[in-house]
Length: 244
Length: 222
Image (tube, rainbow over all chains, first blue to last red; front, side, top):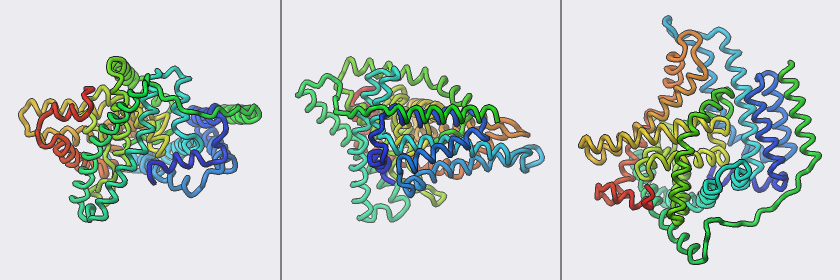
């Protein structure tokens, strides 16, 4: 998976043009529920709701979604296995109640991951970062993050081109060669990135840049029906999670 | 080693946000001051952040047969300085969560503390100390990068152990469990990253072994 894969998916799904606030309400609202409610049945219900929003709702490509979710779930498997065992003076044994603790952890972490995946797959990162302005994050830092975002794909393309050239010339054929090749890519990438930044700075300064890049962004209308549906669903899960 | 989304209980997630906040705020204040004095470094800083992010998309071989990616903790600390790295690190972690589903939003505070604060400060401290102790240039860089990586992984294991103590042996037992299982991948990775960083810094500084030259490459915002 390359750096731009998720970003592309985020721009191509059916909910691309839904308002940022709606998607943030879904992703972050359910995320808060997933980590604060008792995992059973709270997180399980959140998982179901998120799968509903992700697939029938936003029509996210499921193959890519599965390939992306595999990495965090691998971490989860390794972490959850450790809750099954206990280590003490007598050596290693199965922990009392370990299965239950591991299952609850899996439920919560899965629900939370589905929320993050929903945001990552439906909303381009630039929009989400831009939204931070409304949360009192200083403008300089938001601008820095947005500039970083715009640089990421250019520098990543450059790194991928260099790596491809090295592979074509047996640069990765031995382990030590591979390590040295990667080091050479990094060593060549940093001065190039800096030089590119300086060139761009000169160009922008010549055009009277004041430190803010204004780009057109589409303001999408908030659908009240959707907001009401999400709030009702969240209230129902909150109720079910605290009462059951 | 990123803690995945939702792995930490809400109280721990909030706690780590609170612990990281002063460092990130101090770094942010520093960046705002630098940017106000020298507006031209804005793009340099952004390119540095993007560079740090792209490192995580490169693959390096790991001794256990799998492959992994460099973290750039040591390299960033040596080239850009640790206080700036706190903010750049948080931005990188945020993009890793949003563009690669690596790490998470609730665990951002915990990951930022181990990867953007503890790791860079340790790497920077080791780099300075080793230089003062008269170790060779390559040895200082290797130690800084490898120890920066190791400390990050040990600290992450401690964070996990704090959240999930062992029923019998408590925090210590859990720290050994988490540390033990992730050591399989993280120890070889730390060594690989140490070696990698030596080659990078040597190539970057044109083998002049001059710390100023490295700082010059980084756009002099240290």
